Image (cartoon, rainbow, N blue to C red; front, side):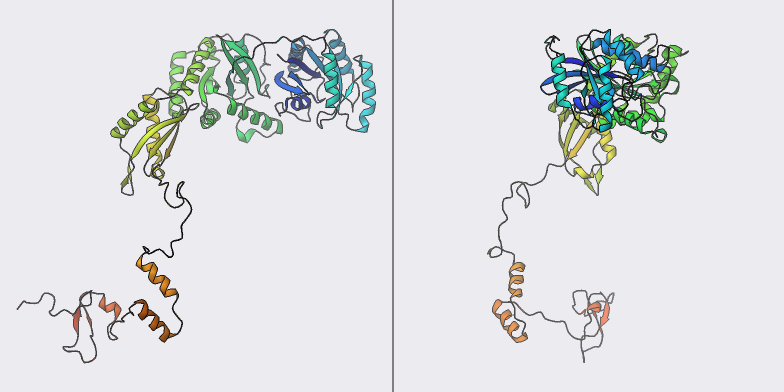
Length: 541
């Protein structure tokens, strides 16, 4: 097990920047304004040859009322209690402030090793601040620059010296957890739901909308299964997202959906399946994740049965591509209906991970095509050959058929809906790829065609090719060219009679002159050019 290290300090001193550098990823949101980080966030990091479990905290505020800043202070104190080593960070440019001294007095009562960091020490202006840091009583400060990566070697030596007396218990690596992301609009009750599930006030909650900014992961064990719950920031409509910080929060939420396996979409019971909820559910389907609907604040519903039936009908009508997804109505405030959530999540996870045998798929394909044959496109019918599942999570199938590119979308939807009904894959995204397997590998340009041969001198070449090759070698002189054609066996083209028009000879029944002094004058000419001896429709002799 890695040593837990908490990065603490007053607001806007660079705690999240150092957190991202040690983790090696831009996990925590970083901005110039103070108070960006609100919840405590855990992540695995490394410095030198030391593995660390880093804890990013909110800026310390000396407030004890019921405000948001006071609740952020409680989260920071919880991180200090959980950590083995504390990195106390101050701003070397601004020097030691009164809030730094108050926080230093608080850390002296913890009786844990503390390493003092003087951040933003890359410029000459920071020299005075580093000197003032000696007065905080934590020994020699370590000048660093979290943004530019300066002083990391000195930080490693300081952590190594401070952790000599810390005993780290070795534990076995746990199994890979099931990643569950909780999404929804602002103030829908996502953080409250997670706190109710784990039975602890792990996440910051309150009546204010938009409290959560980062995507916070919480590890949890439910009935022997490792679960990782990911709390995300509320997502408003794209037109309303204007500030840079909110755009970063939305991008972090989308990334959490991408790396999740099951997504819980929390909606307010009064305006469930709003336009934003539909867009979020469609995003989950396009990412190929299992989805579970949750209607929150159910303790305030006066007619729960009728309202639940109406919400299920709306889900099937407005999101037919996710028809049959589990639907749970609950109240995070008093815990009503929360016990039904995790069984529904695991059911969706098992359906999302299902694998269908190839024999069963082909038996189903035969029945499905008999019940509803593929349509004929341009007078030619599409012929499905066989089908197989290439992967799960989400279930992905490949159908081999002739003229695969011509298969219409409505027939693909019919096949997907039939798969969902036949194999009980309700509520999970299904991918169907139609391919044509009739390509000849030995054809020119194929996989087994080999190098192209020179066929210019072949005796079996077509006659027109041989004539074309001989015609290219003819002389430009008229007499010489005739001699060459005679030797080559090329007969000269015979021109039609001068008095016969080409347009007249092709038209049946038309009159044309055979030639000057022709007998009988004008006669009828057939399409083949033969002269008719009698008139059309005339009496036979």
